[in-house]
Image 1 (cartoon, one colour):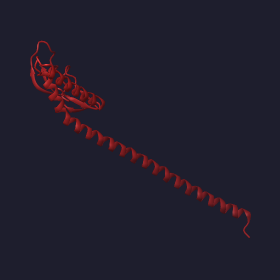
Image 2 (image 1 turned 180 degrees about the horizontal axis):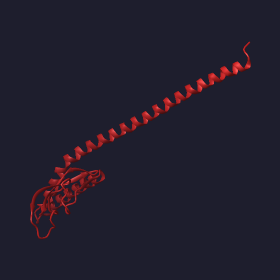
Image 3 (image 1 turned 135 degrees about the vertical axis):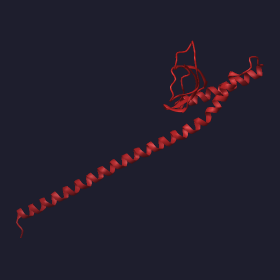
Image 4 (image 1 turned 30 degrees about the horizontal axis):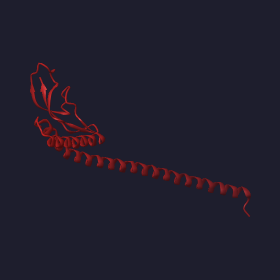
Length: 161
């Protein structure tokens, strides 16, 4: 019959082996959980990026509509009848709603004045000006837009030299 010391020694060795195996399994579980979390974060980022790209594409397609509305209002005849004024007011509401949606979607107009920034502005002409400091915008010919800090379309501007 084995003595008590040998049994205890064998049980202690089994315990050490079981603890090592448990630690190995626990480490594997932790690595797997971390990999899962990283994968989940990557998938969420990829989804958000896809949504942003789709939003940018749609917004870029709507910008000419905003341009057309703006152009129509700037070239509106001064004397209109009551019916025509009602139509104009209706289209102004449509423009206002479109701009509100753009605002909600983090689409912002690039500032129409200030210093020329080649990353945000497209210079159509450079000309002398007594009223505007050199390197600053004289006039914006077409509004530019940004989406979440990224330029969707640069503003077309005239720049003072």
